[in-house]
Length: 421
Image 1 (cartoon, rainbow, N blue to C red):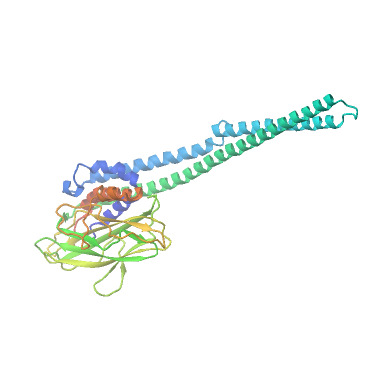
Image 2: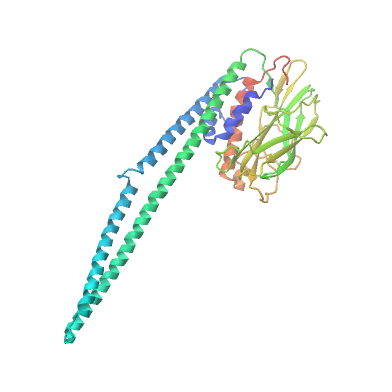
């Protein structure tokens, strides 16, 4: 049985919803990585994760209800924006009437001037001409007032329409958030149920911090429509041979909002030996066993990350780890998930240079990236380089995945006779 079977679900849950991470992470945080503070399975931690997921879902439902109520309120005659539109329309009607009156007065003044008899005095003609001038001024002012009133109607109506469009969009976003929260709640519940089920009987595997996994050559930016090759180095830093070592790799990506999952557009592959062929990483995120891996030895695995051309700009993270089984019945695995962040650039973009760096840095590392880059914890280079908010959310997700995943791994990791694969 693959010892990270539950972990994959927990990681997917952690990375997909940053708001869940903010709720869950404090439950595990005590100033040390979860893998260092927990030596035994903890159902309690998974229960907290499930409870946090439920709270996020309940909040999402409330937010969706509030968004629908906001849109409905904009249809009420008492809504301030609706009141403003009606007031502007009433003012426009008044301005139109006043313009009509002024226009009629001008017509009458001009007629009076034209109807003067031939023997009219200069004083009479001057008076009628003055009346025409005064009527023209009034008619011009009324026309300007009407134009201003009509413009205010359009402005008020546009404001109301914009508010209704924004409210409709908010409903769509709230519905999507509810859908995502429900999926994560169900995933957390399933992880807890499986952990409880597999926590009964069977000897547990143990964490082995000296089983190292390091990624080299993964670019910090991957352009949609391209494939990038990199390597995963698995190192047995112990003084004993590991009979079977299974490399673990998992990739997760979202658009820039951090909401839309790009799982169908981002693919992780590996190449066995020197065959030159490529295989998809299996649905439990494992590759074929390295058998055996001697004490102090390492093995490099050729990896490939392919991003579909239709993928939007976004953010991604690749997690790696390793597990081992021995013929004498002992088993275990690297206690940390090492996460490497990368950006997804839209098709045709020019990618930034540089390799992806780890989002976590386990203690007693001993293995450095071949590229010469240093493994930088979250909050270091990310903050200094001004990465996007969505990337920071993925960074947060990486740390929370360790907290959530560690509990799941320790619960799930156990060796069942004859079920190594």
